Length: 590
Figure 1 (cartoon, rainbow, N blue to C red):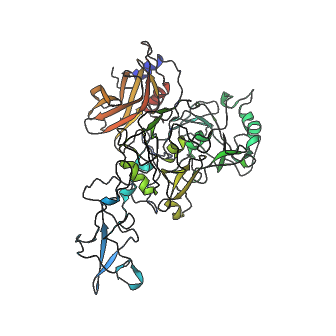
Figure 2 (figure 1 turned 135 degrees about the vertical axis):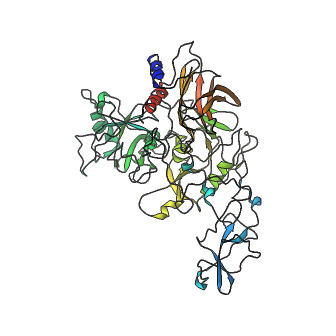
Figure 3 (figure 1 turned 90 degrees about the vertical axis):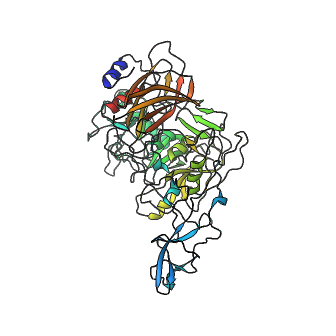
């Protein structure tokens, strides 16, 4: 049955029973701020080894090689004649990685020096090179080594940094403002008391901007700090008051470390959070999660230092923010796919079971490689494993999602092969302190205990564990709104397949259910108007995806999500949240 508007969806909703549990979908690292409808993600800026790039990188697809520039100077000259200095550029193929994630140093070509104007190849490498157009003796530099090039001497280009989190815009942050009674108010309202996260389903009790002085009679005062052992009696007790509970709810609590880090805005300024939904936020905030290495300490998130995750003694006085809703991760959320991959059914992400390089036989994982940040990005993009070629380096939020704070040394589930110590994320470390030196760092996660820190992209090395999954919201392409990642559906239930973008209704689309290597067309030649109502069918599977393909060439694949046992002919979805979110977006909300 095909429907072209909100009316039929509303009619369908009357038949639905609201029994669902929100999956722990992971919002993008960005903070939003886009005014388009539906809102699009605005990710953190794109960075190379030494600073922000002029534009975000694209994949190098030129088989003849992509432009590299000499990395020791933005200008590079040689003395062509006694009185003639000529600018040259340095060419070479992209740093190469094999499909198992190992670096292919044998593929480096003999490099050439070419004139910038005209592109003529220098028949013999220059013997003296300079950084200035006058070829001054005081500005002489070492000439490129063209006889035995290395990764460093061959130079770099923007496409070397393809695969950082800006290239993958997944689950754009989305919030709703609520008043003190839990009722929705306009997104432009200057007065609200709670923020609902549409991605995770969590409700946050926002702070009232402070004046620099604490007021402990008001639990919403942003200036209040607490020792961890006092939070329950002096903060949560006021929100959960038996007579006048905040918003009518008595289940306010401190967030877990996994919940609190999801509202960090890595695209913002200090404090790194969406202040249009979370006003008055400051620096370090307690979580409810004890540090397993020493339970006199507790995990916190520092919104002042870019979202740093660390632990400290309970006696320290930090800020607090309360949350309610959500669900605990399922005990069996991690599924070993018996092919060298592990699927997290809570987040909808698929992970390598071990580190790169990946083996030809998934039961015989070898020794892991340590790479710098550039190498980690390129290695993940090159991997072809378990039948998939869309592996990527995980962003900071995704990487931290597989940390199990209830464990220590390692703080990771045993379904993953014995992890190494430190893993790169695809997220650059950014602060708004105008210190360009900070732009050369990227976040990494320590698996010994889950601590998150940063190190230099070029000189630092970490291990690499790739991820796949999620919908990459390419600019100008199709964005799938429903079904959401990790949602659960019963056979025979009603699923609204909702999308936007693409060809603005000028073409038709084909909608396909993907399960393993099987593709079954759900609808072909249906109008590209953003809505299709589907009666869920197909095999029971936790690895289902929907592909939407327009005749104009736009493609979006959303998944994985789960299809469970049939409902005996009734039309009851397991995930009513997808219906609600779809209605909000179709109606113009966030």
